[in-house]
Length: 474
Image (cartoon, rainbow, N blue to C red; front, top):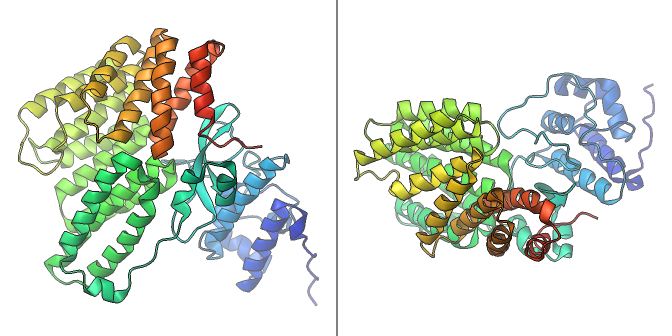
């Protein structure tokens, strides 16, 4: 007769509750601890202690167990809830207590942020896929702003209800609605254009759930299509995946952003459209440098340039991404040479291409200003951002917030903290409207740069405004 399993106490605390859920999934699958241990590559004794909440649970183990049990992300989301509740209740968090488990912990694009956080950001597989419990929001932790997965009810209770919008469910389109759509290619192309325009006004937090639902509908139509329509719909689906990656990054979910962009790259190869592949490679380079992997970005940008048609705007885009990667690595000369090359290539690029219609000298100058800031050349960077803001159309609301925040950081770098704080307050207003992680990340850097002058009135006003729009864990 087998040993009677220990009774669990799910009401004793968040990790007891998680351990109870783990056992429920294991028993529902009819797996003994030893069998699950082999499937998940985790020591059997660890699994028993996880279930009884006797051992810290590394998130990497939760991910591995979720996959082994086909839990569809439930155990990972439960882990995030337990981690957050433990932090709120004042008990020791376990995200840093990475107890050894069998198998290496992979680190790549979208891996856990290297700073010691109390909560683990950027680790969700994605948002809006039936998950109405968690939403990624900006929170002040240990004095810095990070995007973390938080139960939606906590966000709503905090008064920051606008940040919970990505958790709202989207109704699936009925089969007869899809049948009456007319030309699906034109329909979904128009939807994508509308979402791009709307994104810059209100940010992606309200748009990502709708885009994800459109992706489901588009994929359904593509699978039912035949012949050349299949490839055309797949190419459009690829652009949807890339846009979903952009939206995910802008709400602070870098892991989902990498996932969507990787899917887009895979699909682009199937289409056989080298221009599309080059564009996605460039996007992957941009995402890599934005998430701290500048060396990887160099390789991706080089691949994008090799793949781009000669003399195309895609080639220019690739070189711009390469230039900023050099700047992020501190390679000043290489960065400036790459920007000069980009300007030369732009002068003779094909103007009729659908790719990079937005690309002009002003865009490259603004990108160079960002690189100048990364290199510590704050005076030149401030001039570049001030010029970019002056020439930006009013409809580019989110981009204006990004430029304002970067300009403020540059002015802080020159020592003009009063001007930096005043510009920062303007950026805070747009961050509140759009929820853009691109703005928040710059405001976090600005906040740190202005900390030594915290007693000055303008600086105090900026920091108070920023604190009003981020979650403050108890």
